Every structure is written in C-alpha cells, then in structure tokens.
Length: 120
Length: 177
Image 1 (spheres, helix red, strand yellow):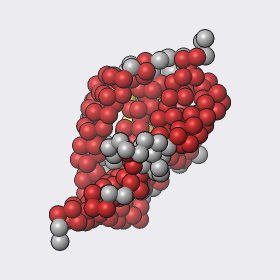
Image 2: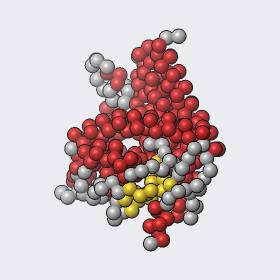
Image 3: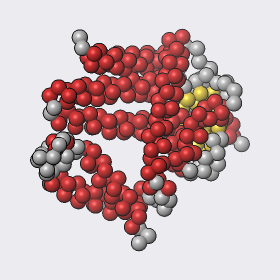
Image 4: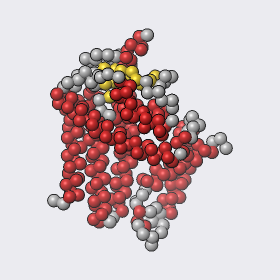
C-alpha cells in the first residue's frame, strides 16, 4: 500500500469515527440542546475530514492521470466545505433558538441566563 | 455613484465564485500556455461575467446593506484565512472533549450569557458561528442591541466570557472591526 492511500484511509477513518460518535451521542444525550451538540458538532468535524478525504483522493488522481476533471472535483469539494462551515452552525443555532422560544427547558441545567432575562 | 461600490464588490464576489466553480472544467482559450487545461474558455468567461452582472444588479443592496466597506481590504481576508487555523485547533480539542462526554455521559449543561464587546454585525456573526462550530458550546440567542450572546454550554465552568469567547475575540477583532 502506497503512502497516499494510507493518508486517504487515515482521513476517512477519523471522519467515520467522529460521525459514529455523533450518532451515538444523538441517542445518549437527554434533551434537544445536548443532542444538537452531538448531532451537529461531531458530524461537522467528521464531514470536514470526509471532504479532506475527497480532496486528497482527487489530488492524487490528478497527479497520476493529469486529467483536469479531478482538480475540478477538489475545488468543488473545497467550496462545499466553505458552505458546510457557514450553514451548519447557522442551522444548529436556528433549531436551538426555536426550541428555546417554544419553551423547551434545557434538561439537568444548572443555570439559564436566557430564561432569567426573559422574566425580567 | 453611491451604488457603484456595492455593485462592483458584489460583481467581483460572484465572478470569483463562478471562476472557482468552473476552474479546470473544460477547454482553455489559450492552448499552448503551460497548465492551459486549468484555465477557462472564452465562452465560460463571457457567461460568467454576464451572470455576475445579473446577480450584482439584483442583490447589491443585500450584500452591502450597511454601506460599510472595511472588508474590501485584502489584509482582512488574509487574516480571516489565517484565523481558520486556530479555529480548527480549537475544534479538534473540543471535539475530543465532547467525544469523551458522549461515551461517559458526564454532562452539566447550562445557558450562560457572554458579552464579547464586539461592535459590528459581522464580528458577532463570526463569533456566534465559531462558538457553535466548536463542540461543547452552542449559540442559542443573541441580544441585538447589546450584542450579547446566550450560549448553551455542555459542561458549565467559571468565567464564561473568557473561557468560551476569549480565544476567538482577539482574532475576530483583527478582521471584522
């Protein structure tokens, strides 16, 4: 096995481990907010590494075959990564805000500044 | 002429994105040049410029709503790119922390208020997104007037403003304010 394949496999393993942890967390955590932590953050990190995998793979193919379409794929994946980094926290924030506006309390919470500010 | 600057910035941004998307996608207009298979064809350029013009004429009032052109300075864009490195390191560290909490189930959640003392909308947006991207902290709400953020913290600690936002604020001040 050559070293570029090794790099690709390592990146892919990291990505799968974090995506799996995110999914486990989704089942283990008690309420919507803590589940959002697991479901959006761990999977974001995992998916970032998945885009790294695709980029590493396409650069390797480009070096071997010198076909421009592989470089095109790498650039598209990079743009997808930027879109992911912008939209993922925004979506998580929207869900959390909507949940709090609906009056869902964070379970096991020791402190809730937002609730206090609404009362006053 | 008041609209011109907003129009040109939107146009350049749209054109830049289009050129990135079509990089190395087809035939180049200069065949002999080195790496010519990476460049764009004449048709692509004409289409890209027309689409960017249409997009700019429709949306320039949205992108530059505040008539604030600090971000035209390229140094700010470079700092923004450099900022991704500390952000990524923080993300990696915090990811291991959340992974540990996923496995052991040791959580102590709380919603805390932080006051990052950023003045611009862009800075607050960047800070809120950075906080949400780092696992363990999640922006729930924002106070528009005071630019204070409400953060859901999975393991509550002391001094939330410093511990959650401190590491990002000094970077964000460099390019967004």
